[in-house]
Length: 407
Image 1 (cartoon, rainbow, N blue to C red):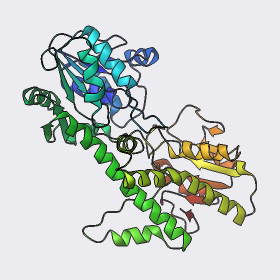
Image 2 (image 1 turned 90 degrees about the vertical axis):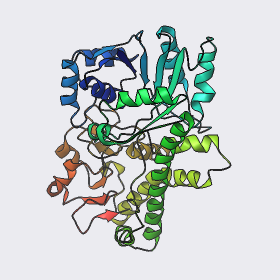
Image 3 (image 1 turned 90 degrees about the horizontal axis):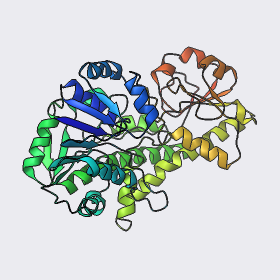
């Protein structure tokens, strides 16, 4: 039996490799010809701890990559699911396109498993109608399932094996079969439920984390106005056995926490007051960082924004993933205020994606007076000695110097 994995990005590729490592026949499909060419030539398209080893094991087990969809019995869809910025609703176009391409070639009775994170009701609203247009009988000609991914860049391989999974299905029997499929590599509990519950549970997970981070960020703003140490306060509060406040930061990035809550806001605008407020707080943090940069420049009589350097382009530490990155959000705020020329460096982002991006750390440091730590990569933790003479705004609370400015 061949499993066709559709979408070979940050989720689809590691998932395909993990299935292939388990000995299953896997074909990965993606419309991006350059991506497919690179993978076929044995070259990975992004960096991730343990991914190269997994890639080689999958190649040894005969994994294939193509732009074509396969005629088979099992499909896993892992394509992007952005939101529409004006309405905040899910944009389902990539999922709909993938489903239609699968319907063009699939065998009768095929299982169509959507891993992409989607808003509650997406399958009922968008996917079932596409299938019914073709006079297919759902549950006979096509079996629909939702198995939302639950991994994070930087720790993907471990989490694919050790994070619990949820399988949403119309049929308990089919759900159990797909559960057995994922059990080839997933060592944690796999729960079978209905599709709508599976859709909602994934969005709720990320929304919970967004709200917790927003609370920490609001505390940081409160403490800043009265010259209190937010990190000490959170540390003390977290000593209570039922309190677990996360850490504040320069914003929330990635394709999960910064996106999924908007699905609920878009679909339930009258019922999501807390969720909407949390999103606004987290989206306001790059502007807060900009204000802190302005304060430091004024305090030290620095008028040239080109003397400011932003360390980190990725949305989290030790990865090259820049999706919804707080640094990119900050650069947008600077652009709005005609503040051009700020320097940028990230050891993990190997191609230039913004203006004034440096590829060498020491060259970057030589050009700046104020260093803004936007991402807590191990790289900068191991190079504190090189930055000790800079004015430092540490948005991640990793700096060892007493004189560093904080959020």
